[in-house]
Length: 130
Image (cartoon, rainbow, N blue to C red; front, top):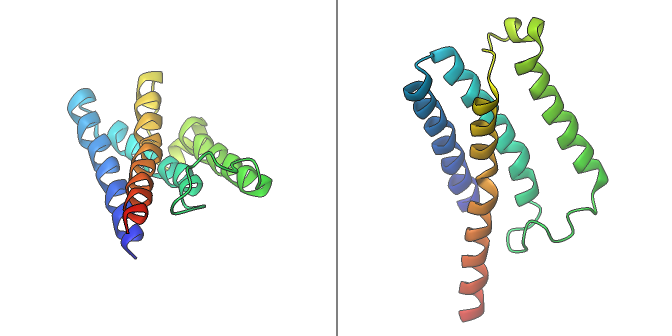
């Protein structure tokens, strides 16, 4: 329950941060909404690697579950298609993003991994002391 609240809060902050920073930088609400959508979706996919263990590092045993890798790749591809393919872009009211906007969204989404690793390190350190 603590992890759910912690990471839910982190994902919310990341998504809102990318929305408001992009709104300030680009001045376009459609671009900001699309960047927030992309960030939230990719954050969920990156976080799937974190939740495999509450204490082990994210890279330990990362290649063991080929099905998970496949599901994450398909999900990421579907999200990219929704945002980048013109007919779907219009259907989902997504704005066309430039490379800088894509990069900001991906970096913001990836931030969940180092944040999770810091939390896991703290947990391991506390357990050793107890």
